[in-house]
Length: 332
Ligand SMILES: [Zn+2]
Image 1 (cartoon, rainbow, N blue to C red):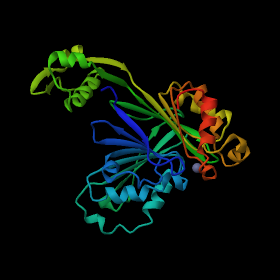
Image 2: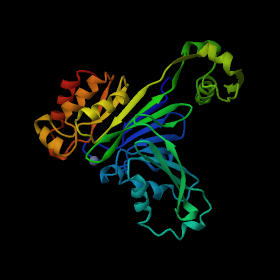
Image 3: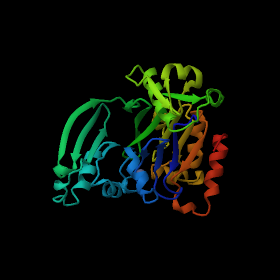
Image 4: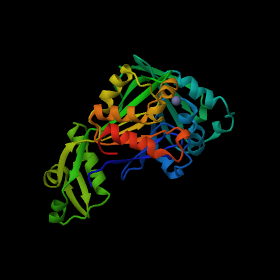
């Protein structure tokens, strides 16, 4: 009952990168990387609110068209975050189609784009019934490793890494974790249900000093949130995940990945090559499985989840997984 989200890869380890993070009992999700997303159902795609994109190599950004195709004709706002050049890449995609018909659409589909630079977050908005003509919004300040998104529940941070081109690494932290004491619920004779999500959200708002509803209806009974929280809730620190893909194994990169991944409950990290092919990995600006495991060990993460295997290891994925297990020496 304590988990706020679930995080799952969109595709298999040899296919396009993508991590779908779905917030339980809420119709919302975020996505890290936007490669091929055909494996996601339309229902899940429609839950996506924010997409954090490491870089725009085609295997990380090819899903843009499918995303837009499904969201057109709906009242929906989507927020995309990417590295240097991202605005030009998004506008290039949008310029590839003729949008004369959608101007008549009644819905309010809107794409918001943030380009993350060393010291600033550039921002553009593209509205469906303005044929996606760019609207320039004010820049926001940004420091590498700093916050790019925050709401009542989560904080997302980004660092600018080196993949031959600029490439982003991300962390997502829950601010708090509200655990429900099952025995206390039983004692009060209340059935768990969807009301618990609303209860947790309001409690988080209260803890954050924000406006909240102080009453909640549970099992046809009305409760005061504060009084109920004292009986049934335990506030713990939240979980953290980190997402790192497409990086060179350099001191500079490791120093920037370290704070993102430090003590993460789960580090999602590429393991593209076997260490025997480390020269090739360096040439292609990728990590080996051993290097991925070493970074996880250094950052003392609780669990590592690897992906983005080179097709040269098809049917030999154990080679990469065993290397990760050996160098990380922990939970995989
Ligand atoms: Zn790449």
